[in-house]
Length: 325
Image (cartoon, rainbow, N blue to C red; front, side, top):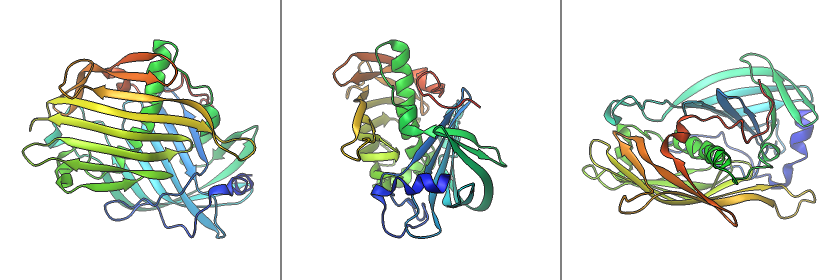
């Protein structure tokens, strides 16, 4: 079933794939590829399967973002038949929630070479992909389908939408080696990191004594249909105290039923704060948000102030329709 599904969405197939990950940035963008999501109150798991391009295997990523933002990403290649899929992981990325520690004591984003395989029985029934095996994965729904009804007309909906947005932000940060730790100072020389599906994010640090961080997203996508564009600027002192500013635009689209232009679901802008640190702005203490608010503005709709601590609880089940495990 899985192999047939992947074969049916090959409109954006690329040339011979390379394994995702290597060097500072080991990600080779794959183009628009199928993404699957499973959400529970405790964690959100996302699977990207690249369509096989004339070979036996193709790349995958498996991203798990815990309720407290701790994130693990496995990347490698997979082999699928009509009833079975084997995941062969080559890389493991880890970004722990260490908000209780000063930045200088944190691990930051890390990457490990691994050689791990797992085989799952697979079924696709009514749009639900179920992978049965060990370690347990369970059931997933297509990412665009799960996010098809995203909206922000109430404060609760706005809070949940910002958490959905943050799935991509956290995924990107987890692959920036040293992010949220002392090793981030290496980016006094600017570096770029590719999105799993498209675009890139560039990171730069002003200097050793002015550790202000700029993240610049350009057509960045890790999950099918969700794209980020814009800049986040974090101004802090050597102790990690300061604030965040600037804006990042986002959009979510669905594939067109006739293969044409993708259909819009929702788009807008996330405001992190004002350049002078005045409110509304997210405030930072020892590298962790401790006050203020984000501004979420929906194109053609309302604007909301979202409290800084909403993202401390990464539960998207209120606005993402997926199988509950």
